[in-house]
Length: 84
View (cartoon, helix red, strand yellow):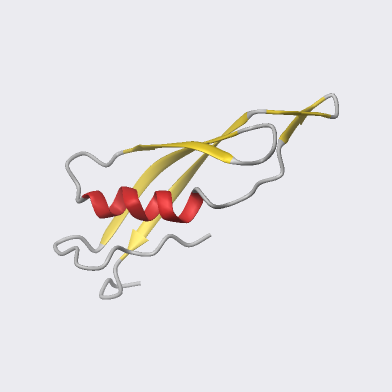
């Protein structure tokens, strides 16, 4: 899943952040926690929220019973002017 690079952000061309998604037993993202943001522009965290909050996941299961789960992913932001 691609998280768009925020518009209007200057001085950064590439950034990686760790994202934890907390998913309930119905597959709904209930909370998002981000690491490695420091003092970065809030548009980065908003882009992550806008991308992942509406996503519906298959819930985790234990003994065939749906349970809440946590998923850690790495998101890489790459500006359109970055060397690929």
